[in-house]
Length: 148
Image 1 (cartoon, rainbow, N blue to C red):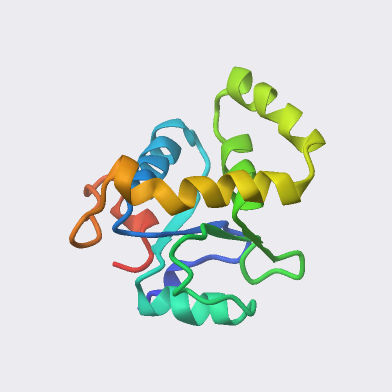
Image 2: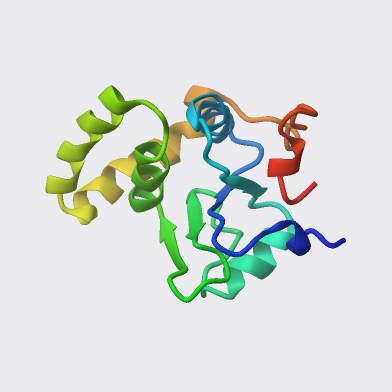
């Protein structure tokens, strides 16, 4: 079974910087609050990320960008990045009070949300740290990391 065979049609895949402290905190947040969601995770540093993102015209070397492929391998599939990807992820977490608060962000133009995203992305290593290598997930969630 190849890495790509682990992905079922219709699943959502989060592509994140595997050595970024902030990105890893987001992954841990999704795992803790995703409930019955079955987001899959893939480090941008992996060969699989390069192959999958290339199909959407994106480059996995853009480590300052978080990507989400929605509805993998379905006609409705699309690529989200930066603030769109973060909002998509957070809206699907099982935290109604939190996601209700996020609804106000839909009134802010994406251009401005991405400026804020880029500001955080530029300082993320300094504020949240950087790992020497991608972290290994625990056994209970390892199957959700498709680049292992």
